[in-house]
Amino acid sequence: MRGRVGRSDRQAFAYFVVPDAERLQPQAEERLRIIMDMDYLGAGFQVALEDLRLRGAGNILGEVQSGHMCRVGLDLYLQMLEEAVARLKGIPEVPSAETELTLGLPAHIPESYIEDGRERLRCYKELTSAADGKAREEAALSMRDRFGSFPEELRNFLAVLDFKQFLTSLQVQKADVYLDHVRLTWAEGQTAVQPEKIVALTASVPDSRILPPAGLYLPLSGQLSFYERLQQLRTKLEILHQG
Image 1 (cartoon, rainbow, N blue to C red):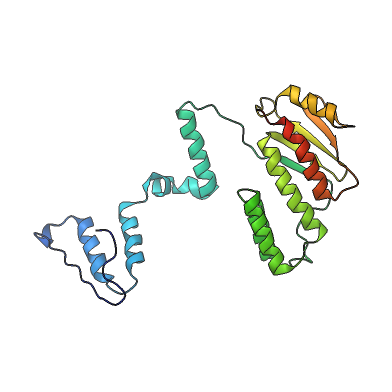
Image 2: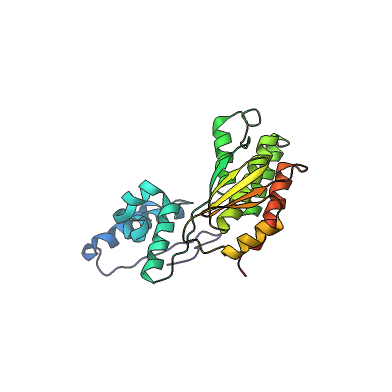
C-alpha cells in the first residue's frame, strides 16, 4: 500500500483481512503486529524503518557489506563500487586522483577567525568537500556572514582549493605552490595533457621552463594579489586542455 491515508482534518482507517491469522508467515505476522502497535500520529516514518529492517536495504547497505563500508565510509565505498562495475564492463579507467599540494605560504582558517575548534573543522570539511566552485563559494559566503571579512590566510586557502580542483582536471599529480611560482608534476600515463601543448605554454609564458621528466615551472606575477596571480595562471593553463 502506497500513499497517504487521511488528511489533516479527516481521520482515516485501514482494515486488513487475512484468511487465517494462525497460518501467516512469520514475517507477514510481524508486519501486521508492527502496524497495529504503531497506530499513533506520526508513526509512518518508524513503520518505514521497521519495513527496511525486515526486508533489508540490499547488499550495499545490508549486513553482508556493512563491515567493509564502515571501514571506508559510504562515499568512498560507493566510488569503489562504481569503479569495480566500470572495470567489469570493460570501460577504460581514467586517472582521477586529486592533486597533491605542497604550500609555501600561509593558507588556512586562523584560530583568531574561528575560535571554536569543532566549528573550524566543520568549515574545513565543508570547503574541501564542495562539489564545485559554486558550492564552495556558497559555503564561503555563509562563513563570511557568520564570522566577518576573510583574513589573508583564508583568502589564500580558498584560492588554493579552487586551483587544486582545476589542476585535478588536468591530472596533475603534484603541485608546489609558492607566492612567486608554481611547480607542476604529472604522473606517468596521464591522458589529460598533450606534451606539445606544454611546450607551447612554456613558449608563451616568460621565465617558465620544463622540468624533466614530467614537470613544469611557472612564475607568478608579483604585482597582483595571490588570488589574482592564481587566476591569471589558471587562464594560461587553459591551453593544456585537449580539444
